[in-house]
Length: 237
Image (cartoon, rainbow, N blue to C red; front, side, top):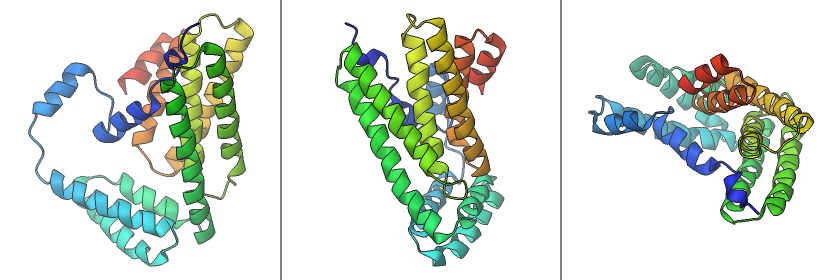
């Protein structure tokens, strides 16, 4: 039997690359970027972003007094470095009440645990049947998480869960050519739903980088459906 790690795209690796680079690059571009000089003020921006993450974590954890500082710093980051998406992110969380933010922290822990479990399953060398069983359980638990978060709650963990589900589905489509037409159509429909759920929340929350990951998945999905024009657009974004 084929090993299950052929069916699971290395989610953690891709996410780390997206977070570290901020965009998807081809190999030569990565080498060129590594040799390029660091723009002036980059270190200051990174320091501001790090402070913003710390204060945002505290605000999500119930420290309401952090909001004025978050807004002031977000405005500064927007004006000095044109990273105005930071403003959108802060306002997304500012619109949530304290209970919703606290619930979001717990839902994020659940999502991260499922992501870690998916990564470990991919590295465990499970046979095909064992992997398919684990994949089905992961998809079920991800769906439960997505559906359990109310519309007026913090839906960002739901968006990440839907994106992980999309990863599992798109790799299944890429690595399982033996799927029948009906099963393939069902997977594609579920994949489109996951992408829509995730994209809608990330747009509403002003989060740019996770949407690059979704563009990549959308490109793979379009290629699977022989929509070549859409596939090229997805891969090039």
